[in-house]
Image (cartoon, rainbow, N blue to C red; front, side, top):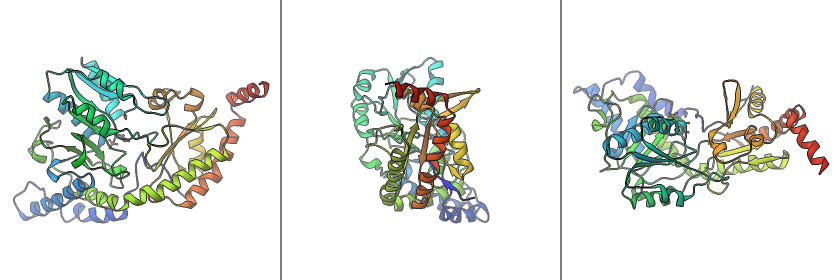
Length: 393
Ligand code: PLP
């Protein structure tokens, strides 16, 4: 069966060049970079080279890069590390559409006695910056707002937000897990103090992440142990994966223009085709400020899970905006925060493309999906009620 992989916001395939770059470090070049002997030197050198490439991808300097195990660890480190270094402050600000790596942590922090403000979004998934201005106070220890949303692809105006936050001299963290490699970022010109990203979203393997920490930012480590990463994260560095991430960042920089042109036009073709071929279809989120690879669509009166299973049987891998928890299908907190009606949120599907997708992939989806929705609507009681109600009007 042919595989059409359009779930790249969940994870990406490892680029062949990345695999090739990593292989020697899983075999012969196995030294610990802290060791004094030449094997340690080899590892140290490879890590320094990778750190430079990773720093270049976000316009940072190499000593502002801390390697972690994943995006979740980077987010946790930024948030908990900042709270620890500002113990007198008890308030943090985030948003209602963050990934669980931030969202669930904020809920956890709230239970520990912190005040947490989760900013709301409108129907298009956009923030109201006046709400941010109104909620910042002298007690605010940190503002953590994602760069781009993993479900809808909506991009927040991070620099505008940063100016508001920095005018009050408050640390500013952004979860850029979905942004790095897809849109250009330059920390030299940015208001961001800390930025998280993750290798497996940009064609490196799972198990490697990054926290960028601007020079001079007050910070306490989360993993306490050895003096690795200049005392900012204990634990022997994962050299093969660090090397892989370095290669992936180099490739991402090379492919950024392609991501913004070819991938964008494939995404737009898919979106346009779905809207044209399938009635009662909505696009979720601000279509203007959006990642070039992502589209979240809702097919009203059908269930996202059923669509995904039928697509999967045809070799098409996508995601839905609902999670099957304890037997009930709950729409995602992101779509709920946007106020998407249940009938639409239940039938949401996210397609997220990569540079490995082709025109043929999109044609195949556009050929296979319309009859799936038609079949599912034929057996949907909600669709029947909707048709009956519309014919009475
Ligand atoms: N933040 C965002 C926006 C994400 O999309 C993800 C993963 O889906 C994460 C954080 C967590 O990253 P990781 O899977 O590397 O822990």
